[in-house]
Amino acid sequence: MRSHRQRPYDWVGAWSEKRAQLSPDAVGLVDATTGERFTYAELDRRANRTARLLREEGVTGDAGGDEDGERVAVISRNRPELVDLFFATAKTGGVLAPLSHRLAAGELVEMLNDVDPELLVVEDPFADLAEDVLAREDREFDCSVRSLSARDSDATASESRELAADPWADALPDNDSPVETADASMDDPHLFLHTGGSTGVPKETVLTHGSILWNSFNTITAWGLRPEDVTPMVFPMFHTGGWNVLTVPMFHLGATVVLAREFEPGEVLHLVESEGATVLVAVPAVLRMMTDHDDWEATDLSTLRFAKSGGGPCRESVMETWWDRGVDLSQGYGLTECGPNNFTMPDGWSREKADSVGVPVMHADARVASEDGEELPAGEIGELELASPHAADRYWRNEAETAETFGKWVSTGDLARTDDDGYVYIEGRKKNMYVSGGENVYPAAVEDRIADHPKVEEVVVVPVPDDQWGQVGKAVVQGDESLTLAELTDFLGGKLARFKRPRHLAFVGEMPTAGPSKIDRQAVKSAFGEE
Image (cartoon, rainbow, N blue to C red):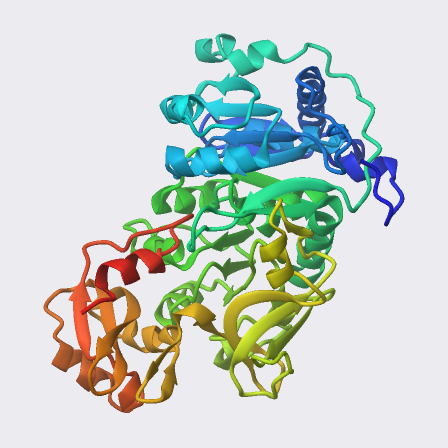
């Protein structure tokens, strides 16, 4: 498995070993579901036991002559065992491939056929789903399967009878002494993280040891993370947000990550106060739901040094609510294929720039490009392209998509513009843009203005056919259904050009989501995009 591009080093896979040596007694992980707290010394011992089990299962850095390590697929909610597997696969030279438990059996079997794991680990709540996958006629992969008990109570390890009967815990070797790390290179894969799959079955993105490390460097240096930082991890660990937004950078520093099987806004507020959280990153919907929660005003947020929104545009009204509580909230931007931490707000940034995602981090470049690949000047809208050593290596076993996305620049598929100060503004997905009467309309910009209306909680704008203009916008709103199209049109007067204002209005009780509380725009478009 040794790369020909970079020599292997013993420390490449020694994440938990190195941190245990540097800060053995620091608490690295808190399981808010069970109340357990794990020091870095304990996490390394757990990783050693897990690494021995993986080697028994054949999960090594040698994939039968392939250049990549054996894969461990996981279907589970957030729990300490996923952290054990992250550290353990680093030691063995294997690859961790967490899969979304929200996918259907047909989607999962296609992904597992692609990943071709040596071991599949399934948390008990998804046993039926896994059985459906394993029984499907189109299944091609063959692997060992291990189950994880749910352990959703607050019982400690010594008190839990369920843990004593846990097949995963029973299978772990008792020996937690140091293990020999694999002969791994910075160019070797460590994580497979799948995309959202909005255009079909999700693609597995190959993240190397080097890309994970560089993203961590960029996050620490750009965001000013500290060893004493504490964060609740509200992203699922099948998502790049669950690992690379904060978890890995926090482990890199010896800081503390708090996870739970499920997070709801009230519990996040509780954990911010009870754990003294200093950093919070969440999608806009979660940040908004926290401000709407009954405990919002009573919760002590004074320990938060800053918060960041990611995964879509954050409405200015939400940002102002956080600012009013003294929390420095700004927007971030990233994607599985690059980063995901690509931008930061400079020291002393003006809130006039709040609609932007900031400027590129220390070791990343960004540009806005035209259709023919030429860089556009400030103010013009084009595709955002990124370049950084933290970019992913490729899509797994998908040469055509790899060639389209990865190169000197990573093509994001997002439209953006820059201002004269170098701040980057996201204008929406390239595929979501539509043309009305010969004019380009970017739904994200329209949605921002509609969301300012007091009767609107969430909104998605989709194009629909129009005999006169070719296409016009339909606003699909979650909120007060007494809102009329005429009322909305009047509200947008002076805020949006006439051709950008929606000509149709529809309501949903709740927006469909894909991933961690992220609005599924494709589902909205499919349901409302035809007249």
